[in-house]
Image 1: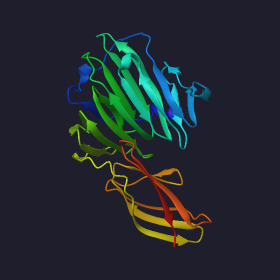
Image 2: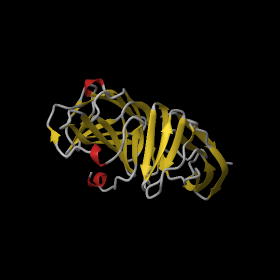
Image 3: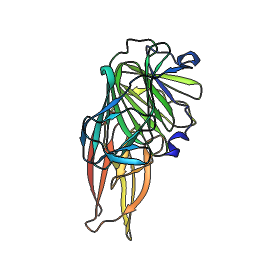
Length: 276
């Protein structure tokens, strides 16, 4: 759990209607009854509170900083925000931790969650209070919205892909801000400025250039949309900023490699790669 707090917040996504500056942070917080409710858990969904863990059942309310939801392989869940602010759809193999659930002195409600790796999709209604914020922290920084629908994919090395379906989101890092409007996507790499927005693909296509067996290993060389997540045998791999990868995975007895591609908006496509 301690590793969740080790990352520097250098990446900021905000809705078009919000401005990110020093004044947006609330210096004081007011204790209120805030919560997130687990909805539609599927498969193995775990709720972690301190040193204790248990299955996350439908209707469970999460209220404390540090509380964590973990989805295992083939599992998923939805977090519903109090007062009907919106929903966070959590894909499989994703870790979501509460950073902040409170109310600022200005009266707005502040919700901050952390996603170390995996994929989430946000559906947030337009926030009516000027100081209300909904934010997602990744290994690259913080993602904040004020009313939009967008998805975030986070590779194990912190590379963060963003796809905006509705509304408008801005991505900021290294002193540069790039607007990602509806129908566009971009990529932010820790330590670098956000990439320029390009038309939204939401395309889980997997392009294989090389598939060669070598003893009990298989070398796989290929390419995907760089904002996507790629998995072989349910294990995520890192891809470069152009979407290229070159990995070795175990060769199974049936000579079929299981692969999967997931877009920031959560579109998934499984593959069975037959090794010649």
